[in-house]
Structure formats: C-alpha cells, structure tokens
Length: 149
Image (cartoon, helix red, strand yellow):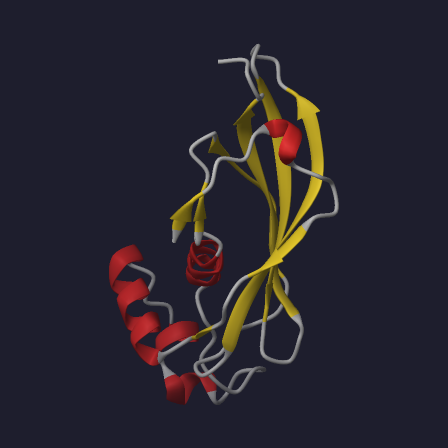
C-alpha cells in the first residue's frame, strides 16, 4: 500500500488496473457471518446446500463486495474520497476455494458541483479464477482539481 496523489485531471477514461488475487476460505464465511449476523444456510450449512442448485455453500455477496473492494486499496489517493457505490450486482456465486481479483476501469468523469472538485467513476469487476465476473459495481470518487485548493 502506498500514497499517490492523483488529481481529477490525471484520470483518463479507459485506464485500467488489476489487483492481486485472494482465495476465499471457510474462515472467511464464518467470520463474515459473525460480523453481519447472516447465518443463512446458503452460506454455512454444507449438507443442506448439497440439496440446492449450486450443490455447495455460496459466499455472502456482501463479503465478496468487501473483499473485492479491499483488494483495490493498494493505492491511497489523498486527493480523493469515496462518495459511494452504484449499480452493485452479484453476477455469479463464489465458493470456498475460489480465487478472486478485481479489475478497475475509469468509466466516466465530470466536473463537480462543488468548486475545485470533480467526480470520477471507476467500474469495478470482481473476477474468479475462471475469468468470470462474479460482482460488478461503479465506485464514485470525489476528486480535487489540480491547483484549485
């Protein structure tokens, strides 16, 4: 993890970065269930899941979102802050033993309503070991304009 000042003008639509991977473990399932209170059998009951369409436990979507976004935090930009996430979709299930990584593409930018700032949209895709998108969302950033503040 490192700091890198990137101002609004420095973002280019189409620029992309790819994160390292992370293998999802059973411990991840248990810890996330404890943090959120989501103990649904889809995530924790291996025997019941054998009777369901996927045949095995599936990861909490919120856990994959948290881990997938966490993987993107290798670069800290002191000139920007997160405004939130739009269009979050859980596209495919993730299982214990799956390895995911994230791909971030600058998809839009526009001058902000507040003087000295702009909005940058990063399209985030979380990808499994088979190259399939398992989660997609748009991350909105509020970013300083160079020399404005």
